[in-house]
Length: 118
Image 1 (cartoon, rainbow, N blue to C red):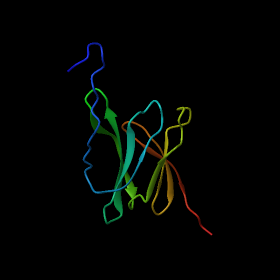
Image 2 (image 1 turned 90 degrees about the vertical axis):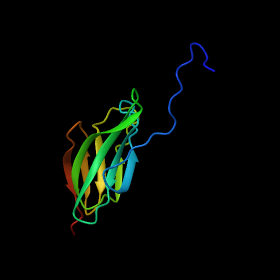
Image 3 (image 1 turned 180 degrees about the vertical axis):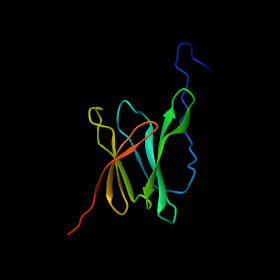
Image 4 (image 1 turned 135 degrees about the horizontal axis):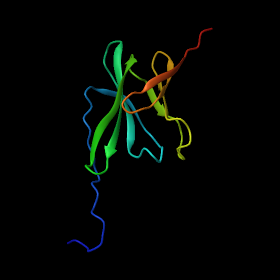
């Protein structure tokens, strides 16, 4: 039974099928980029991928906004903790090194590679 004037009920379960097996993922907390996550592939070789997907709230579907190459699988992915949306849109990945990326649509670019050489 529909209640007049009530907003339509939203879908509660969403699905996204990545093009490869996943090894890591992390949700973004930016208020201007709701329902966005980064997904890291697990391919048993050097060439892996990271994909940024977000939910289109009008169609209730996740879609890829950016995909970029990553050497080795990402053991961890983390967005900059930015609940106010005031910092650059950064994403960090670890694998062989720690890498910092600037997220963009459609291009995400590498900002820096950090490695501990002693």
